[in-house]
Image (cartoon, rainbow, N blue to C red; front, side, top):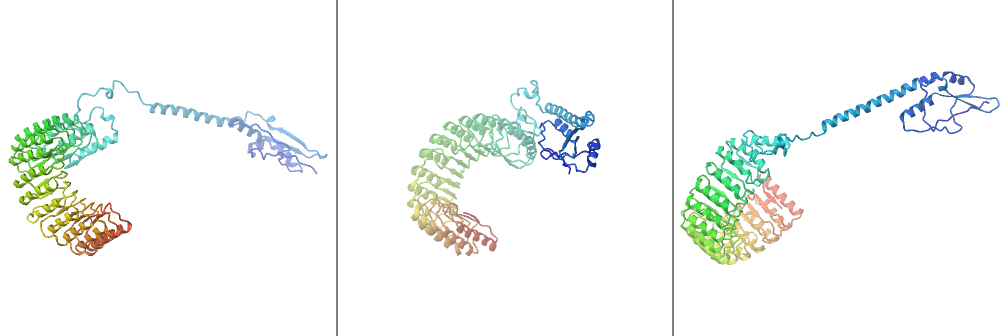
Length: 614
């Protein structure tokens, strides 16, 4: 039996015969097919082929495998005879293989060249062009501001380079809308001088805008120039707020020069604007010329005795100013004394705010003397946080006894004590104009509050009594509650942080059963705990129909207190409460859930919203 010689290609690429190769090897394959033994491929030994990553070589090697013809014939002696014949010896190598190689290499080369050319073109277009030193952008900006009345063109030179296209479009759109608004609040936008020049021109054309706030925007003295032509063209604008901008004395001077002939602005706000004595002098000069301004706010600036003296001189000549705010400056006793002389000759002032000027007792004496001699009918007097003691309270009380126009008196955060409280109480018994009085933070105790409580037996004018931050304790709460139970017309009673405790809350709760005027009650920070909350809830359950706002924050109230208040809200069908504050207590989710259920119940029954904070 004849044996067959085989060549294995299992460890090498499987290459199927292509039609053209089969045709070229046709005679050899046909000869083998005629033999009695089948032709198979099996290698006696390994067929080693060199490996290369070169694509062209690999393809050429494949071509050679495809043209390889193996002849095997059986021998009668049993010994196999292998015959290897390369078809390349019989056919030309320059035919089909070369064409196939070219068909691969040529397109690849064209692709590489095209890619290189495209990359160079892209690089040429993307590479930034060198700046032209003679271009408009490199020219030194002209001094001052470039002004235009076309929306979006009123820019400082070079500002366009700082703002991208999208931002400018938004500013343009807003500038156009700014021409139609009646009130604009752009506080805290921090757009600086450039932004102000960009937007201010719109104000010149707006015939509806009466109030604008550019507070806290980083505007300096240079930016104030933006209002030069605007305020000359716009006579509708009545309120201008530049608070929180460091315009300083220079900016104040510029603004005052602009406003000298203005007949529109009635309220000027320059709080926290770094205004010093020179700026105060500029404002004083403005008041001597301008008869339109009604309100000037200069809170939290750097006005000293000199600035107060300048303003005092202006008050003698000005007869149009109604409100002067000088809170948080450095007037002191000398400044108050100077201001008093100016008040003696003034007839128009209605509000004077001097909180935080450390005028002391001597300053209070001089000021009250000037007000007593003045023909001005003052309605609001703010002397809070001025280091006034019982002695100074005596001068204030003497003025209050005679005043028939004073509506609001603030002595908050002084140190008048029980003695000073007694002096004020004597004045309030005679005064019939003061409606709001603030005596908070004055170290008033049980004796002082007892004397103030007696005022309400005869006084039915006072509607708001602020006594917070005074240690009146439970006894003081009882003294006040006993009087307010059936006397007075107090609508807002504020006793926050007065140390009244649960016992004091019980007295207040008893008052609520009978009082029919108190609608606002502030009992924050009194350590009421659950006991105090339960007492108040008992009064609210079926009795009180007047109270609308109740503040019980910071009172160490827990879930039991919350349950009692929630039940009171559900039980009283005529409950009037719309605001309940229980923040900063010790409520768990159970107490909070009870309050939420009560709120929903009230809404379902009465269709009334109760704002509960916990």
